[in-house]
Image: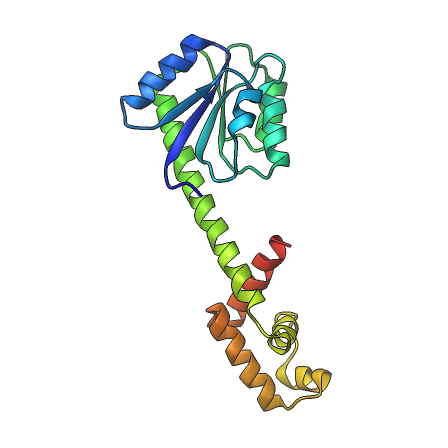
Length: 204
């Protein structure tokens, strides 16, 4: 993922795009603007960091349609909608799909800046969570086949003696494998092992 966050402005109104770029530049926030959803999709990739400031009524592909396409691509960039013609059903749909705000034009600049800063913090937290999940995935897949069997049974709530009987090994061997599993996954408690399993399943 890119280290540098940007605000991606998508609006068919050139004046709005230029005004927002100037506003964000004045507070040292990088901004990139696009006149259509298609133009943004042409350059979009999963390494992008930041947030979207998106007009809900852009020609050919509406803001809501772009939001859905990005959702289908598993894009986690936070979205702030801006509009001069929005109505309640649009706002409800936008929020249902995960938008963090729906702001009417003309907007209060400070309010928009505050929401953008909140979106950038959210994006950073989501990125950190994603890194944790991928690191955990690597750790789980580093387990040997026997360690994986023990891991699966332990996180399903089985006692060591039950696991030993199930796998036809000694209870002491189960304890050794369990210790190795906890070390490889950086877990100190059963709850942390269960969390590792849940995180792993979320990526599979």
